[in-house]
Every structure is written in structure tokens, then in C-alpha cells.
Image (cartoon, rainbow over all chains, first blue to last red; front, side, top):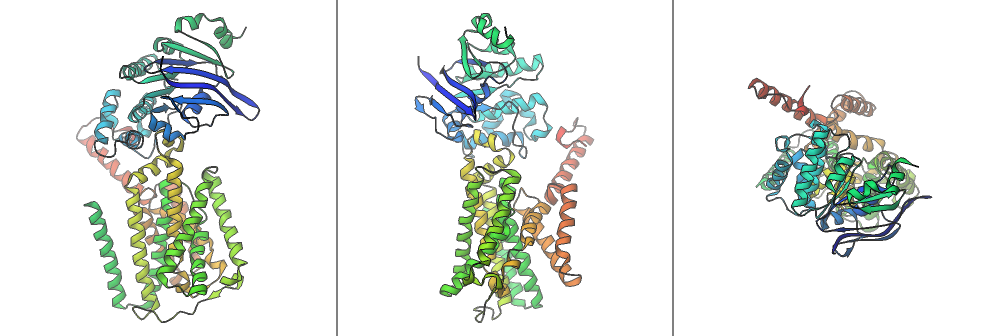
Length: 238
Length: 330
């Protein structure tokens, strides 16, 4: 099994609080991995460590066989680790199209020539083409989430980390986003999905990892995870 | 093609400056024109960091004065000629800029601004206690006869035209390059920019260094202009306020904004100084700044753009093109 991403006993502490305690996860190329856990279990912290937004306090992170533990975030993006944010963080002074062009230009190295065409293609696939010339302030909540995903795609990821892309969306909208993520995965992009909407995670993931209080408490196929007593305890208490 | 046109416009402005210099109009015009053009350089330089990257620098006086005092030190030591002073003044303040660039690692938003303000106070204290460049009592420069034009006022005016054109062209080039787009991204959201592959630290260091360079360039000829330099007026709060107000009034996201702001506000100040009182300057800036922050936070250019968008939407509405885009509603 060749791992695209290897998180090797990564720890992270904030002052006296141990947010991640030697967490290890291996992600295969092309895999759809779900990452779940109660609020405050360390999911987003783990993603911040993988994307480079936070430095780790122990352990190693390997991507494509290369040690990236000390690499700054923008270089990880250029290697192919791209994340979307829980709360969309669009570039507000730019149009939707320009938002994507930044990612194309800086991460995908598609310097100027053809950048607009590539960006438009992505917008068409994701269903935002008609909004290309608008600024993000004019988008609805679901469109904002789609922009977040579209921009991540423009960075040409090998690994896409989707951090709660569906929180607060309606059931039909969730299906919409799921369809997009499935399509990306078919194109060969490995996806880690962090989500609270169980219906979505269970349908999407081939494998689910459960975090609780900074440690990995379970791992397995979705069907096994829902029957796992440790997981039940983490979510519901005893 | 576009660059060729910009260069042509720049050359035309320099040509106009030379023409005006040759005309020998009322000497006060050159005197006031120098100040307005100096503010074009300052506002444009400030905007590279404050407007493009979104880091508000309150330390403009430190940069401007350090440019001026570098000149004094070099005149004292080597009788260095004006072009050398300008380059060296710029390089010294570029280093200072690089220094505050590293501050951005830890300080964002208002905390960065406070730190740059403190920097201004620190540099001023150092200069006050450095007797070699005049210390607190100031430094008097005895100008040699002017090399060209036979008149320092005209010479310095022409020089400032040249410096303003170079600064504005540099700012415009950066704005339209990948660097400008990266700076805009990090201004909008630094975390998202970094995650989209934008090397935010490198770009910020570039912006602080370049901004510092041109702020120093603006200050370097200052001793020749005033001939008497002392800390209180060289580190004047006016520079900090104007450097911020001028781009705000014109619009901070493009190179044209600071130019418009500097010309409008700078000219208004000069006119007020002559016709009413020199004390009124700061009051004018204050009132205008408050008005703009409240009524047109994106400056004149932002106002124009919004009007255009509204009109386009109305026109589209009349043609029956359906609902206006949400952005331009109301």
C-alpha cells in the first residue's frame, strides 16, 4: 500500500492543552477518507498541521514520500495539498474568476496564459460559471461553499482536504456538494473529508477515522464505525 | 504594448515638468509643486504596503526623515551629490522597511500600525541625540550654486517630477504583475492566500522594502529643499496622516488612487496655507478623511466604480435582463 499522506505520530499542544496526542493516519492515493469526532476533538488542528497553518510539536508528516513537516504552507499547496476552509475565506476584492486565477497562478503554475480558460472550466463543472464576474459578497451561502471548493480545485490538488464544506446546508445542497466531491475523486484526487453530517460522511468515505480529545480512537469502514462502542461513547457519553 | 503606453505617459509628464521648469513662472509654483509631488511619491510608496498588502504603516515620518538624515550624513561626510543621496536614502529606508516586514510575522492589523508608530518615535529619539547630523538644534545646509536651471527651486521641482513618475510607474508595474495579485490576495485573507500557494512572507517583505525605499527617496532631497532640517518638523505627524489620507481619498487598490489623493489634498493644503492659514492643513485632512471613511470608504475610484456598476445594472434592467446581480443591488 503506497501512502500519499502519512501522518506519523503528530502531536500539537497549545500551552498546557494537548490538542493532538501522537496521531497517526495513512492515506492511500485516490482514497476517500472521512475524519470525524466530537467538537474540540482536534480535527481542524490536525488539518492545520497537515496544511502547514500550524507547526507541529512532534512527529512527522510525509507527502508523496517526502518529509514536509517543516515546509511552509504555500509550498505544501504547490506540492498538491490543498484545503478548503470551514468558514469560507474568499478574496473579497476580486471576482469569483479572479479568486480561482490566484490559485491557478500561484499553486498550479499555470502562469497567465490559459489561466482564465482553466478557471472558467472549473466554474462550469461546479456550477458557478454564471457568477464568474461577481464579487464573493454577492454569493449565497451554498455558492460561497462552492467557490471555496472551486478555488481549491484551481490549485490542482493531489490531496483535497474539505473542512466541513457542508455545515449549515440543506439536504439537497449537501447532495450537490457530495456529487462534486465524488467527481473530483473519480479524477484521481485523494480526498479527506471532515464533516459533522453523518449521512454525508458515511456515504462518501471508504474509510473513517475517529478522533476524540486529540487521539485516534477508531478506524474502519463506515458500517463498522457506526457500530463501534468507543465511537458511541465519544459522541454520546456513557 | 500597455507598458509602452505607460512609459509614454510617464515621459510626457516629465516633458511637461521640464516645460514648466523652462517657463519660469512664479517661483512659488515650483515651491508648492515640489511639496505636492513629494506627496505623490509618499502616498504611492505608502500605498504599496498599505493599499496593496493592507498593512497600515503609521511610521511614514521615520522613513521620510531617515531618508533626509541619510542625505545630511552623506553631505557631512563626503559632500555626496544629489543622485547618490537619493539612492542611498532609499537603500537605508529599504533596510528599515525590510525590518518592519519581519514584524508582520507576529503583528497584524492595528498592532502592526502601533508598532510602526512606535518606530517613528524611536528613530526620532535617535536622531535628536545624534549631534553629527545636527541633533535637536537642527542642521543648516549651505547649498552650492544649482548645477542646472541656475535655480534650486526649479531644479528640485523637476527632480521631484522625475521621482514621482518613476515611483508611480513602479507601483503600477507591481500592481499589474503576479506580485500585485498575490499582495491583493493576502490583503483579502492572509491565511487563504498562503493556502492557495501565495508565498505571503516573501511578498510582504518585498512590499515593506519597496515601500520603505520610495519613502526614503521622497525624503532624500528634503535638506536641499528646506536648507534647515530639524527633527520636530522632519518627523512631523503630517507625513503619517497625509500618507494614509491621500490613498484613502483616491482609492487604495490601484496606483491611480494615491496620485489623485495626493494631487487633490496636497494642492488643497498648499492653497489653504497661502490663503487662510498653515495651521489649517491638518484640520482639512482630518475632516476630509472622516468624510471619506464614512461616505466613500473605497475612495474616489471606488465611488466611480460603484456608480458605473449601478448604471450598468440599471441599463441591463431596462433591457429586461432579469434581476440585477446581488452585488450591485440597492
